Image (cartoon, rainbow, N blue to C red; front, side, top):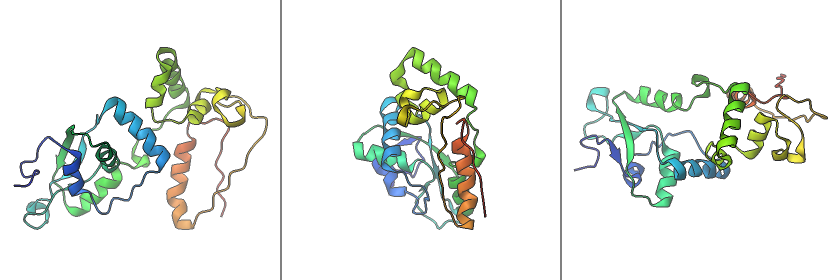
Length: 204
């Protein structure tokens, strides 16, 4: 009997590897993977991974294996670490089209909140006051933290940021196709949110 037959509340990473979605469009680079691993090392898996039952009632063939909808990067890291800790699951029962849509929705920055500059600066400063090392478990780079708090020590060259005027400007040019720009522009705007001294100009 397959491990998923009774829809358990949790499963091992090695079991979840069997049901990775072959269409998952998200990748993670080495630096971001290292930051995610630091978070997992500290807190474990604190959010349920989403799995679609792929039932006959939703148009799938009888006996079809379920599909992991979210959490591929987390499972990949846990597999490398060979941990035997069970990972909490949230089961859904949706069609293939809705499964694909959910995979995108769960990681879509257009369907998530954005950091408010003054608010995140206050939270970061509280963490620094309580336990500076805990900043390493936020997922932010030192440069991003420095930019949000106005601390020049963490910035390349020691430039003052975060509400302070810049002595000089740097032009960063990114060229995209028209189709790619429709995805890139919202992502860049979200990345610049909370970073004073930066603006996005779109031409073409």
